[in-house]
Structures are given as structure tokens and as C-alpha cells.
Length: 144
Image (tube, rainbow, N blue to C red; front, top):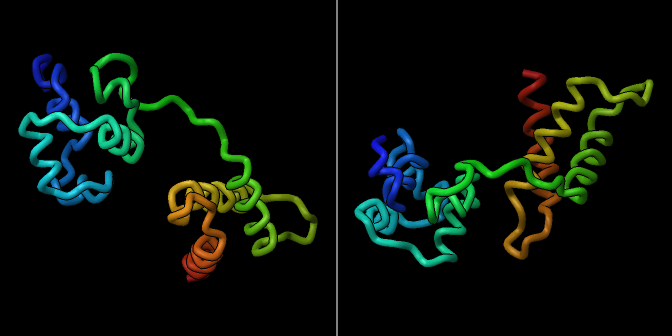
């Protein structure tokens, strides 16, 4: 990537896309492939579209829009509701006799937390039912 490439929105978008196909990256960030191609060709997105792309690509909006600052967002504040829900769901499913959480169980809490953060309902609330299905899937994968 040349200096000139990273000085434009299109260049920074190419950097973010990396080796992913246009279809895969467009799907990841929630835009159509044709809109992605338009941006890669030099068209500038609206602020809301740029923010959507940055958020879904875990990228700093400042960097994507201007090239300034850090490319990746710094650690986010923990979503306490999601963490509490993940902990409760995992504890109910994988409780040990001693009541202590093993490293394996902690990994499951983190996986469930990440699922809850990534897959919310359309109204923005945590999708506990989907997380429960994810846990069942995780459990079946661990037992196979």
C-alpha cells in the first residue's frame, strides 16, 4: 500500500478489506457489493455509512474518514449486560460441583459474551434466545 493509497478513503477502505473478496467484505460491513465497488473507485460515503463500515470492521471512524489516529479502535467498554447474561447462561449450562469457574468455562463465557455483542436483536437488545442456541451448539461441538 503506497502512501498515496492510504491518503484517500478508497485507499483506506482497500486496506481494511485486505484480501477478502468484495462480496465477503461488503457482507461483513452491511453494504451492497456495488456500493463497495463505488467507494473503492473513489466515491465518498455519507457519515452514517462511513460509521457503519468502521463499526462493523472494528475500525476507527477517524482513521477511515481522515487517515489520522489509530486504524483499529481501542478496547471498548465492557457491555455489562451482555457479560452478565453470558456468565449466567454459561453458569447454568456448565456449572461445576465446586462452583468455581474453570478456564474452559471462562472461555465459554467469553465466546458467549462475544456472540451477544455481535448478534443483537433488530431493536438493539441482547438476543438471549439466540445465545442459548449458540451455547447448545458450543456444547455439542465440545462433546463431539
